[in-house]
Image (cartoon, rainbow over all chains, first blue to last red; front, side, top):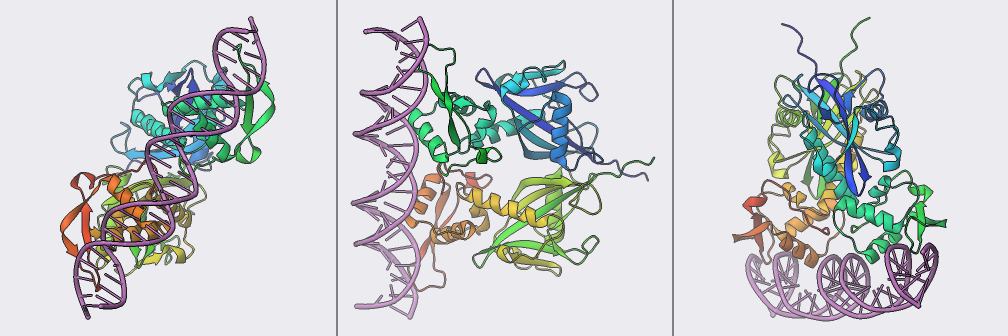
Length: 225
Length: 225
DNA sequence: ACAATAGTGTCTGTTAGACACTATGCC
DNA sequence: GGCATAGTGTCTAACAGACACTATTGT
């Protein structure tokens, strides 16, 4: 009798960004079997010699395949079993990264890398379609009661811009007064002394940034919004 | 050069039950190294030949170590890395099970199995202490806006009993009127035609049970409680 | 009748959304 | 001054908690 084949240990990353008011997922073209040539989530084997844990594996995958370091990288869920990968019994620890669009302009759009709108995704190999759905569900759910969407903004932003980001993620309009009240209660933003002029020929809006103590962790609201 | 050692793939289960108004965790005494003799979460290697996925592994572990089939078994998170297990780089997919106390009376209290109150836990091997904390956090969080605690009740229960379960899990008193309003809005309970008499010499309370369509999934409330 | 708990009607403070208004820049 | 957007004051409806009351059993 031969030794049983080992279990394949991998990580997959759902990198989300906001482009033209729509969430987009980063996909890479697979250059190896199985599914060579297909678009799929960036992922790869855990390197036990190199990675201290699976989160480090996910960060490495993101660095190697998209050339970036995501400020937000959260474990999503783990997908496993005999059926999901033709190579054998596998474990895929899925991570979700949120990145502002401007970090993806030059680097990530190398050959074999693409941003695809989440409402126009092709069929994905493995169970990657399911993984993306879980990521969207999680991000939308967390956006209802936390400051998570600020990770999709650049370092400075106006309140109307931030509200638009929330509305894009949640896919529903928000009340302006309530939104600003909530942002005020969360206490995570501080105005920067300059004003934004944008393109419009209108009144400029105050720029805000995250207070230093909120750079590292989310801010949660008791009752949502 | 020799092949690198494989990554160890395991599952761990945090089984929670309510006993005397306090959440208890099921621990088993380890009979093998490392940490032989110590109390730890029930867990074990994934059996790629036997388990269709990690959830099946967790169900098998629960069956083998505690002799029961949990109606609620949810993936919690995955713990991984070089540091958490002295045997090497490991992946532990953690699951959370909720079980009503009466299912644990005879079977599970075999030798080498114990229920320990969560506020009196000993130091646990590996990162099991951290895993228990994540489980408690998740259960308490979900209990704030879902019907999750009904999994800790027997099949029929009175509203005062259910409220006591919620209060035990959340560790805070709840308003009676609001609680009953919410349960009514969730629409998941139906009265059964008999009344409960319990021990007390007082007015008996109406017994309720889950409506059939809510047996399989949680019921969520928009605004909590 | 009384004790003790089950269950309900209603009042009040809080919160979220609607609306209308003012403010401020560019043309 | 007009226009378009930023930002605010205030009214109202919905909701959650407090309180007080009624209901129903066993002793």
